[in-house]
Image 1 (tube, helix red, strand yellow):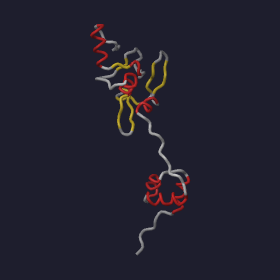
Image 2 (cartoon, one colour):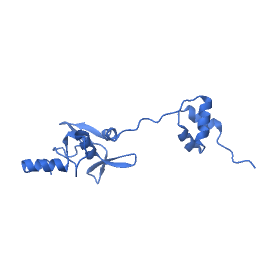
Image 3 (cartoon, helix red, strand yellow):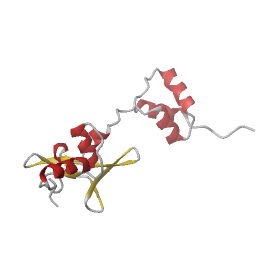
Image 4 (cartoon, one colour):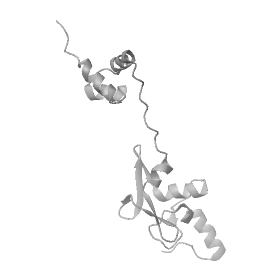
Length: 147
């Protein structure tokens, strides 16, 4: 008794000519990626390459917009209406912690807040972590963060 009818070769060829990957075609048509690869090789269609994946810093930048005074406003998601956050490859990132790392080249210690008067700021040079605020307080007797 013969097995079930497979996916027509013409369907695979059509998706190959559209530029899809073997994996995408296999998932879409419910067929083996090895079969798709063999057909690709027979037709001498070059393999497709996934576009470059954004880094955390590049993804962060997609949610920022310049505002007056040299600040950056956050246009992305706000957790609990106040904390700028974004997701990349299934991980949550704090926009302020990423901004701090961009400016200082190190991971922040403790909570990161803007050290300027622009409440929604995510400009890297405006970010202060707990260590910076503690040093500021030790020197000047008050924190540099408003509020």
